[in-house]
Length: 238
View (cartoon, rainbow, N blue to C red):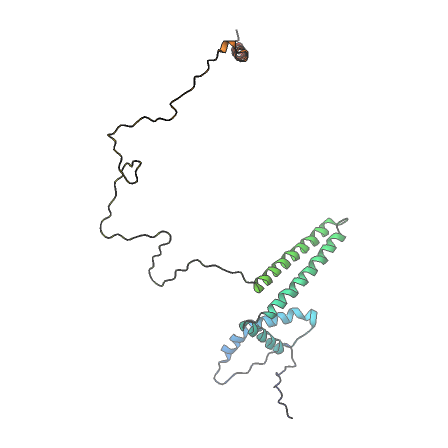
């Protein structure tokens, strides 16, 4: 049984060269401008430069194909690669934090400046790790936004929120202030007399107090007179 083989992606022996083929009717300058301003191509070149000390050289054309595939997955709604990237970065940042914290502890007793520098790097890695986890959590569980009201109009628009307001045609009539009695919405008759109240008519007699017989009262009056006399003598310079 014959099986159809998928066409292989053309490979270039030079890992840093990108072969460009012009279609019929395409402008060469326009094509080069599109390539040089392409976000996937620019970021692939940057990735190729930074990944070389870690993984060695990678083919530029193959890397561009992979980058385009990743971008297409995100456009289609598949965020699995991004979630994997953030998870791996959080683990890497946590490793950096622990490594810098250990170096800070090793220099704590003798070299305080080095210990402080390593601790600053450790705390920066910790903060970035926490931020990466927050972004990952927001992707997995997007926050719910409650919109109470959205008023959208292309022209003039008037929105009345709150209590109902009724439009009145013609001239506004200002109502006069009226005195109200106990009855609801009834005017007060100012010519009538007010009846006396019958509440608390009975009052108990008040006991008389003889201040001269109160020892405590005499003591405080004597103390007050002595203080006044002392203050008067303090200002007598003769």
